[in-house]
Every structure is written in structure tokens, then in C-alpha cells.
Amino acid sequence: MYLEIVTPEAVVFKADVDAVKVPGNDGEFQMLNNHAPIVSTLVEGEVKIQLAASNKELDDELSEDFKKDKGNSNILYYTIKGGVLEMKDNKAIILAD
Image (tube, rainbow, N blue to C red; front, side, top):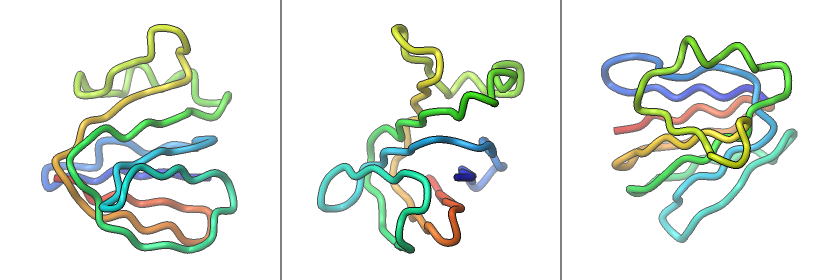
């Protein structure tokens, strides 16, 4: 699936991913490929991104706000203060604060 993370300043992430876990109002939830359409508000926390195998070259493009998992280089974390998520047609967009 395709993921975009948009902040008021810029689009900070756009790439194919295998999974994304977000901090929803009622707790964390994860979305995989072909997830049902959803719109959800997000609270403060970390977005956990599992990169698709084809995205090894993203390292040079990512800002310092992204943290890598020490045990798995395919996992990234991005901290948000809140926002909104929309998932539709295998594309997830996070509008983050």
C-alpha cells in the first residue's frame, strides 16, 4: 500500500509500505495492504511504518524526525502530536501535527 505523511510544513514521507500502525483515539491499530476504507482521528504517539522491501533507498530522503528500529532496518518510527488518517483504495494519508 502507499503511505503519505503530510505536516503543515511539507510532505515528510511518501512510499510503498507493507504495514502502518497509528495511535488512534481508542488505542493503536494497524493497517495492512487492502485494508477497508477508514477515517480516524489520531492522538499523540508514534506512527510505526514497515517499509516495503523495494524501499531500501529511502534513507537519504528521510528527515531526522524518523527513527529506525535498531533490530530491523525496515521499520521506521515517526512521532506525531495528533492528526487525521484516511485509508482508501490501498492509499493511506496521515495529516499530522
